[in-house]
Length: 121
Length: 230
Image (cartoon, rainbow over all chains, first blue to last red):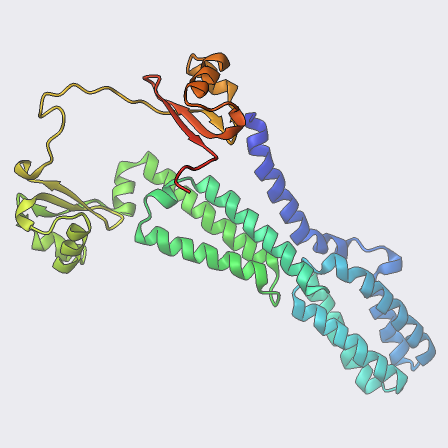
């Protein structure tokens, strides 16, 4: 086997591994506007504060879709606890918005934002 | 999140990373396994196991940890190869525990080796009588090397003034029913010769042969798929 092939196989393999493990980080930081989860969190925050429950419901749906798209790309990068945490936050947030309960919705949204920020580390 | 897929991907990453790192670290790890190397192997293996199945933490920190341990081992290996004092300091030195038939208690105490340990290792080598031992040395990997007193050493052909022939290394001419042409050339023989040799032994087809080797004196060893003892 040629020497360069002998050395390039392990180097290439390690580069692929690094890309799989760290790819999620680059995905999060390069999200387009349509899938930008931070943007939906911000919008939901305003909706809940000003009791715009109909738009809150719509934004939550967008957030849910964006999150479901993000999970397959993040799963090799993120901790399972954080992914599960966000899933729970979304479920509880949905209940609080249906009940039009800002006191329940805002802490959930804050925790969700915190989980999302954690994924960027 | 599909936990099964994540575990599969992380296991593949852990497995091949370990494989690459152990290949880089070389054969020394296996051939001269000191106690430290043993602990080191367990630690690196444990990090790889966590990387593989512990989904409550990210794969990346474990992978970095794995790499750091491997790089440190590599650096220490390099240092011990380049500097003799460093090798002496890091790996240690062999210790003589029996010299001219005398047990060296101080040496044994320094390396925390008991007489029972020495006797065990001697028995392991088939030596049950301490009177036979000229020198016994505890190597850096904890194993005991023994030099018997001259009168107990086995006689060699040289002692008996016998002439011997070097048998050299065998080379495979047929493996699994297939002729290895490359080795035929190296052994300075051709297919015609090989087939005539097979015919002499009553073998009609090359495909009947599982293994055929030739030594430097031209002597052929044959093993067919059909075993007579069955």
